[in-house]
Amino acid sequence: MIKRSFIGLFSPVLQYEELDTSKTVDSIKVTGAVTFFVDKKYSKKDSLLIKPGDKVKSGDIFSVFNDSEEMIISSVTGEISGIEAFSGNFGKEYTAVTVKTESGGNNVNKDFGKTLKKASKSSLNQIIKNFPGVVSDTVFVNPDKPVDSIVITGMDSDLLISNNKYIVKNRIKDIKAGIVFIEKMTGINSFITVVPESLAVVAQDIGVPVRVVELTYPLASPMLITQNIMGRKVTAGKTAEDSGVMVINAETVAAMGAASVKSEIPGSKIVTVIDKNGDTRLVSAIIGTPVNTVLSQLKIDVNEGDRVITGGPLTGTAVYSDSHPVLPDTEAIMVQDREDIPEILDNSCINCGECVRICPAKVPVNLLIRFLENGEYDEAADSYDLFSCIDCGLCAYVCQAQIPVFQYITLAKHEFTRNNTVEAENA
Ligand code: SF4
Ligand code: SF4
View 1 (tube, rainbow, N blue to C red):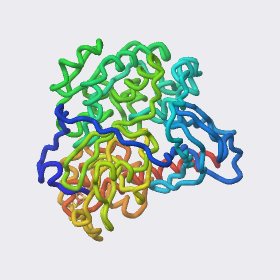
View 2 (view 1 turned 30 degrees about the vertical axis):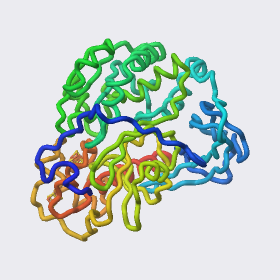
View 3 (view 1 turned 90 degrees about the horizontal axis):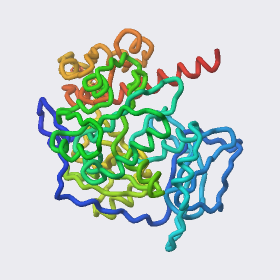
């Protein structure tokens, strides 16, 4: 939960951030090492395709495991210095690959663009997951979920963030090239761009239809864009892709364009950094850079008891170490002063109904929370619309009893999916 003064004290209507065009983007220098996460649990018994001491160049694409398609794009040139298990939030297991960077030189993979264009559809799925921006697990080449329309979003995922708006304002040519690339690789030729009113004129130059989204949170959620703008119904538990629509961040599309045309390596991420006062800055950080490197270069102190969050004010997640890396989907880094962290209280729901009134998905949150607190995830999913939730975080924001409702919901979705996957595998 967050300091409400960041985002409009008790305001009934929360607004996405407008782009402040007077702001510049600070480049964060990498010092030391970067870390990449692979979406597979690491075990020492695994057969690995890389080992400590191996050299990599910026733009090299490589697999880590013999028996997994997961790939990494190295954002730096250097030497692999570690491969180890990493436990993320909600018990999710990853493999962390650390690369010690080499100083000096300009040793990069100059054929990155060619490699990308020649990639098979299945490896393209894996490669694109490393591109900056939030890319769906299924990316856009998925025979089970045939997508016929692409929405390029110049909106951002949470309050105070303006990454995609910045990209629309400044990288029209790259976005256009990205559209050409996607069309060539997928055959999809139906594109629209969604932007706030303030960018509607600029976005015309992208050359595809432009639709304006109001700044009222959470209207820019991919689910709501799919329903409200594309007119496609997304049923509970399904994604926008199930309805044939892929919503892709402008940042990702621009990175695809720059990679395919200029062989530019998609190794940097635009990140909104939110300090303890709620002031924001945009930075460009090499993917894999430790969060503490970003904060120290911006001279933002993190003291004992402060909290570091990746993501925005309503949907971000606290990281337990500020050496956590900037990941391809790290949209924001937020530092919360220890004085502003709400006390963890063992409060019960007082049935005030605020969460129900604000929920855009009409989830009966006041009833749902009772099942989530008891770990009854099947009941929550079957009878109380757990999977209708669009992950906006508003219920936790308004909760009068300060129950971390959104965290309960996120945990429940994760546990429900994990339990059902295990059951299916054992069947
Ligand atoms: S996070 Fe809460 S308010 Fe938002 S859709 Fe889900 S249940 Fe509703
Ligand atoms: S806002 Fe909090 S206290 Fe009020 S009904 Fe919802 S969960 Fe219960």
